[in-house]
Image (tube, rainbow, N blue to C red; front, side, top):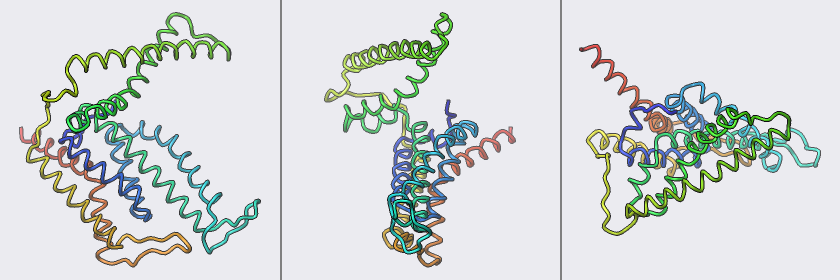
Length: 296
């Protein structure tokens, strides 16, 4: 279970805008330095939320995916001027395609890790709060989708344990297949019943009807305003550097980076501050909590 941290306690608008910025930048900025900052920022925040053990388990399946993405690019993309060798098909293997494949793999890892923490921070009630009035049907579908995967996994473990307690943990390949089919059948029935119960419950409460009011525990405070100004300001500064060419990095036809200037370094530092904002806010909250405890 994810731990609640300081950044997750901020207003949903702050959380959503932060993730929108870092996800867009992670997918669009292919500069190696920016990819490294995004990857370590995402991994650090996941470790903060879930603990190091769960992040290592996440990396166990993420790293092979990244390696596959890195290998596929030079297998199908043969652009570049630095030819290393020739593949059995006769196509050249270029150094530039290897570099771009590695960058694409890191970009994939960044997006996956940011979405892992996104699922912990942006809960279903935050989605309904943000989009319930604008797009009530879509917000309900999104919130149900976000909740479905962890609930399905927890229910699957319960059903599997109940089957084993009843002595239905069959041995052998075909026995395990029969046991798995019985669990899947129970899970499908549970999923359909849960969907119907949720739909009836929301309809009975008048969800989506015009003029319907709703209770919310979220209040936009001065703390949220300061955090939002910080995130938006950093995002605008990074976007200005991106549009102005301060983050230029070319892979084809030859690898070439832009000049290192005071401005380019400032853009990188601003992006690092943006990606590390949740950790910085958590660290600030921990320091304040320790100061309060030492004062008492």
